[in-house]
Picture 1 (cartoon, protein in one colour):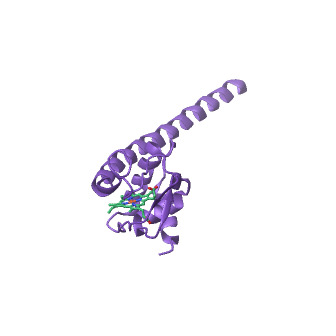
Picture 2 (cartoon, rainbow, N blue to C red):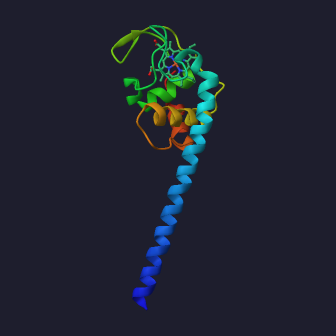
Picture 3 (spheres, rainbow, N blue to C red):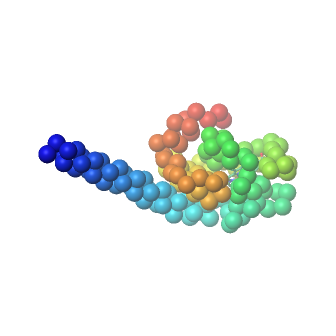
Length: 139
Ligand code: HEC
């Protein structure tokens, strides 16, 4: 009897874990769906639909070495970026305008999309992680 209820607890635990994971997965997919739209409407003009950038004017986001600091990416989306930078060995020096119209949630959706599509991640960047970063950005 004790063994049997032990087994039941194990099954229950497995079911709960599985449910949690699939909730995260659903959320990740929702973020990505929204992120694609936000990217098209706010970023693709310059960085292009496939994130490949445009000549020496706009740097690529796809496979960009700049993605190694997610905090910097979160901050530059809201506050823009200016001054010379090097992306994948190439120099760029044009101002990127700030995007204050995007909410914290929209920034999180965008970052989830970018990192899943072009940064080799398969996970959600939750708005709960993004808000504290945005509050700490130096302007
Ligand atoms: C008006 C054109 C323009 C728009 C719109 C724009 N960017 Fe940029 N972005 C730039 C430029 C120019 C730079 C390089 C800035 C510099 O040289 O300091 C840059 C840099 C970046 C970088 C860091 C370098 C790299 O390529 O990895 C990221 C990430 C980025 N932008 C993401 C975005 C996202 C996401 C959006 C949409 C919310 C966006 N940008 C909208 C022009 C733009």
